[in-house]
Image (cartoon, helix red, strand yellow):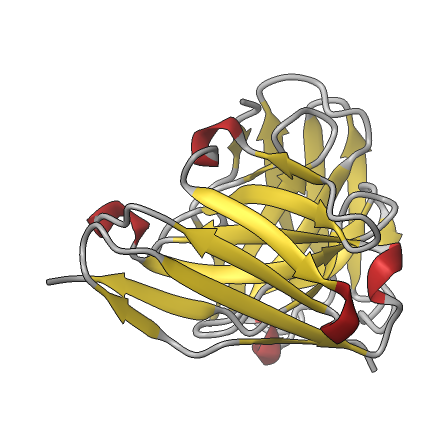
Length: 106
Length: 118
């Protein structure tokens, strides 16, 4: 299975720019998606196909990358962005998720 | 408005089976795949499998073959997942999620906690 590696945690202050990385163990083309999950809730889709903003998601969120290296950027960060962020690939079978990056807002 | 409403929490004994439901509304059920996913406490999310609302065609993660069986009832726009021979390793939150044409999960149910305990 394709392994997606994310850094476990980040802490930033409101108004700052944060980048969350995701590295795939093999190429996933641009079939990479990003989700936000708050405690006790279901994940919500933020970015699909590496760089496309899901409808209704604030433009503060953006995504980039292709192949094996991907980035989710939040600029500027707000207090409500406290959550765990997951990348997910759908190029290789089975679809797999990263272990998540927990974002703390100081 | 698209909605996926899952059934309530389950407490089941080891060795038993459980059937989870995911009732949908706000879109044409038969035009989309529904996926089921597993999240153990504090852990990663795992994809269990997909089922097509139109004809019930399925695809499974090899890891969950024999454990999960996916079905649909088109008349009620509801997807189901049967989990069999439950062990403590099956204790988790299970989500249903709609699969887009871009192979992302755009709408999710609220999740259902399954606890396997004697």
